Length: 207
Image (tube, rainbow, N blue to C red; front, side):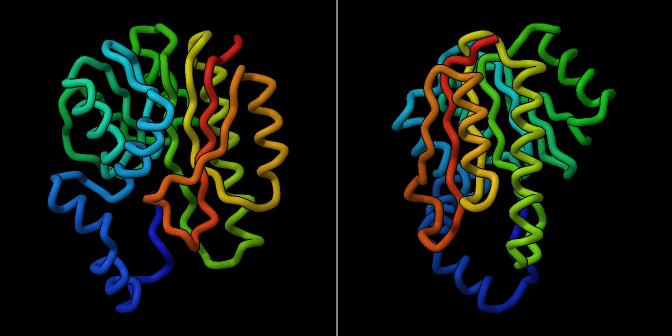
């Protein structure tokens, strides 16, 4: 997941004051982002034992960590990222670009060729600070995640995807409604109030 541009003192100071950063350290989570998925899951009850999950943009592993701990390891998770990620139980990590055929084939191999129950995407582009640049990049990532759903998600499966409010989001939501029975857009409390970040939660995929 991307970080704000630069590593300025003000950003570091905000991180240190952030209650979710402090909670993540206290509770042993890899990132504050885990609370976003936790809050979405509390609202939507996404997770079930023995499910198969693909986690896109997984590093440093907070979402995969939450899923495996919530399900006591009774889950198979395929985590994918361009960046390296430390080992987690019940998680097979694939480092690479999931849009490339060899990485996609590795995902299929990791799931035994079967379609999966849940696709998670917390991907975001490297932020430039220019909305005219950042918004198309973020929508492109979301579109790639939707493309992967068409490749690997089973009928009745679910999809959670980070979006940023702005140009392209309405068309994306409309497209999701064609493919899923129920679609919501949520802003978890852990998502910073000033951020345009929201999460699409799409349930019951129709092949």
